[in-house]
Length: 469
Image (cartoon, rainbow, N blue to C red):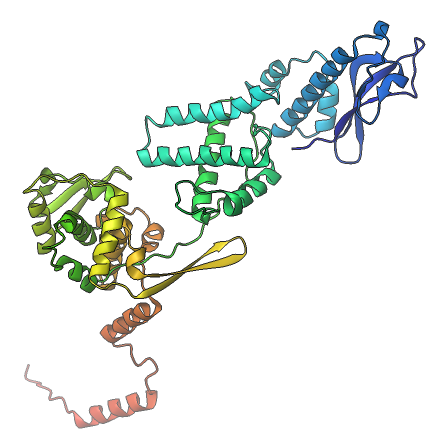
């Protein structure tokens, strides 16, 4: 955040001893000026207007040029931090507040505590302040890691990595005073176009929109935490929007899952555990973190009782015959430990072996451009495909959404519907089936035909009346 403030020497107001006072001139609203007295004075001819500093030729009776320039820099930083404090605390008349409170020996932290009950309002904009931002980030992550999942800790680590990469890219330290709207735009653009994604075989630049959104979201949560603890002054981050886009993803039909289930793996026995886990996940809707941690005692009366790792609440899942068979067979032998990356690699291989290779084209935005990727369907499969497949297949079969959500563990329908992946043709066929079930294939019935048929039927049918009853 650049503040339009600079030191100057009032050469038009020379005192009797031949010196003029050094001031800070601040355009506090872009038009009107405020002058802050530094308490320093030198003969005007020894003031360099271009460098805004005291000349080395200043006679010794007026002080050391080096010490005077150092004091000017210290006070200039102090004045800027006072301005930032007033702005962060949303003082209505910032100019008047700064004018009233500025003095060369101001204790800014004491002022902040007295006026706003805020501690550690600022750290000077030098290495200490730079270290302060990342130190606070590290302290925050250490405290949170005792309470959140490993996946969330990974998100924290990625966020820190993104900020460090941006700091290196722009060659300017990131401090708590950096976070204006310009910083947000520059940071978002850097992550979108310039960020070099680590651990890629080929150099790949730019993150997806939702990944950037995760970083911005966690950063905002971190900043609110620091404000609540009164470690920093309140900073308005309302302009730091969290970008989001609906991601393209596939699901497998029951027919496709069946082909994987019946695949002969005699010559590929190493793929057997991955086949079992994947089909079981497709029939239960469990996440990788949950189905890879199943234990024999989770099966009770043909139902799986599982506490979900992500949401930390229990779900009860009925098992089809194939799912129960897989589950019981799986625990007859020692279960191999599997990691998500290996799992994703091998299930792609399984899908390719059974011919799930039709071409799928997906797209995503990068700035104002739409990027398209074309791959065979098997290449789009991940561990999460199983969960999406369960939700989508049950939805297409007509299972009520609220019952599917009881099994999948979704709390909101909005989140659940993000998992439904059907083509426009499948959606049309689903609606057509519902119309046929309701007898709605003909909406606008001919009223004349209806009235004529009623009249004819009324005339033709005579209802006997039994008076004796």
